[in-house]
Length: 224
Image 1 (cartoon, rainbow, N blue to C red):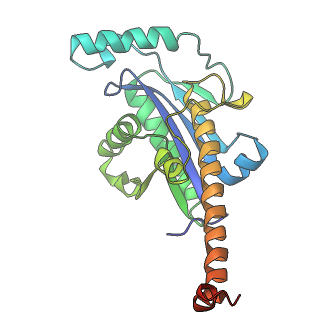
Image 2 (cartoon, rainbow, N blue to C red):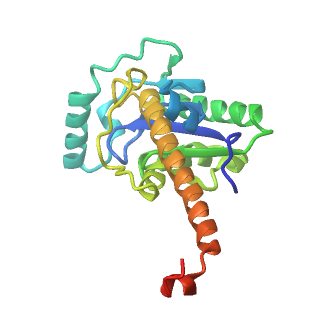
C-alpha cells in the first residue's frame, strides 16, 4: 500500500454517550488531507452528518460511570446546532447505523477506481465500536471493514506532532464535538502530518545521495 495524491481518504468521527455507550451522531466525508493542509479549506467531498437525540439509557450499565458521562454531555453537547446542510436527523440508533452504512456503501462504490483508506483520530474505542456494531449487524457488508484502519494520532506522532494537544481550529471546524467539524479538523491535521513525513523522506533521500558521494577515508585524512 502506497499513499499517493490520488488516494481517497474516508475520515469520520462519532459522538457517543460515554466512551462505551451508544453513538448519537456520526459525521465525516471524503477528504484530500494534503490539499486541505496547504489551503485551509477544511471541507471534504460527499460530507455527511447523521444524528439523533441522546438519552441517558444509551450509556453503559455502570451507574456511576453513566452519571459522569451524562454530566459531560450536558456540559458540552447542548449548544451544538445540527440545523445545517448536510445534517440529517434520524429517530433511533438503528437508523443511525443504517444511514452510515448506506453512505459507506455508496461512497466506496463511487470511488471504486481509487485507492481508499478509512481513518479517524484515536478511533478506539468510540469509532471502532460503532463501526463494529454497524458491520456485525450486516454480515454481508463485512468487506467494508477497513484494513488497515488508519489512526490519525499515530500518523501525527510519527511526524513528531503531539496528537494530544488541543490544536487550533479553522472556522469550518467549529464548534468542536460536532462530528463533521471534528472530522474536518482530523483531515487537516492528517494532511499536515503527511506533508511533514513526505518532506522528511525527501530530505532523507537527499542526505543518502550526498552520503554516497562522499569519500569518508579522504574526510578522515582531511583530503577534502
